Image (cartoon, rainbow, N blue to C red; front, side):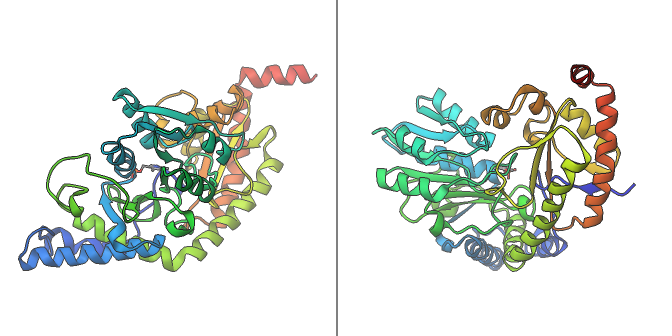
Length: 390
Ligand SMILES: *Cc1c(COP(=O)(O)O)cnc(C)c1O
């Protein structure tokens, strides 16, 4: 059966051009980039090239890029690396952050920091005024994501950054969902730190970066060698870094194409879905939203069952976020936007990518009503709803 992948927020396939660029760095140009001999220096040069490719993608300078093992490490570094050397002890995060930020902040709370978790409105937005009110004399950091990985809502980061700057507080944004898929410019955003991850934009897994604005007080929180100007220890993952650079270059060249193609399919899906399935709702913002994201609630069905039935029919989708899909707990994001239990249970995330086509969407539109119909036929909630209506 043909498989159709609609889960690009969880990860994307590594592009063949990216893989090809990476391969020689496993067994031909395998030198350690910290070594002074020719093998080492060849690797170091390739890394510097990748660094400038990534910097160019986000409007930064090369010196401001620290390579990491991915989005999770970048987020940890931003929070812990600034927290460790700050005399101040209070930090602010939003309630819908990825666990890489939220759980890091909660871990820091256990270590003696104080934490404010900001609420969001019903479309998942942080009110910049609430950020302003949450700032205390002891605040050293604000971390609000650029776009949410479940519902796709884009946050007013520019406003929040300028509030932070005025108060003399550092500003970090987790832009893992955005970089490579939608334009990002650190000067326009005004943030001090920004996290990105290559596997979310057709690069390899296990490599990412943290942008750190020049002059930002940050230290390594992982001890070891002195790589990355002492800010991130560990032998350079040359193949991964080179792949991330190539993925950044492709993203730069294809940015408009990527946005136009997924947005067209997404908007088509958005208009057709309500015509084909009753009792659904679209969650999140209709305007400030990643162009490839659809998040819906199918009332009176259970999200996990929906996912598995669709999987059987050839479609890879997600319910909630991939990280929390081992558990049947309602996602913290859906809780934060105040979704009722029935709507949360039947939540479905479809995240499109460059390789999806109109035919994929048409087949999905054929399959979904059948699957939902089958599941509702055995749903006690749906039966009682029908009885009430009579
Ligand atoms: C995927 C993701 C992460 C984690 O990145 P990894 O590279 O998988 O560690 C962090 N934040 C957001 C918003 C993400 O979507």
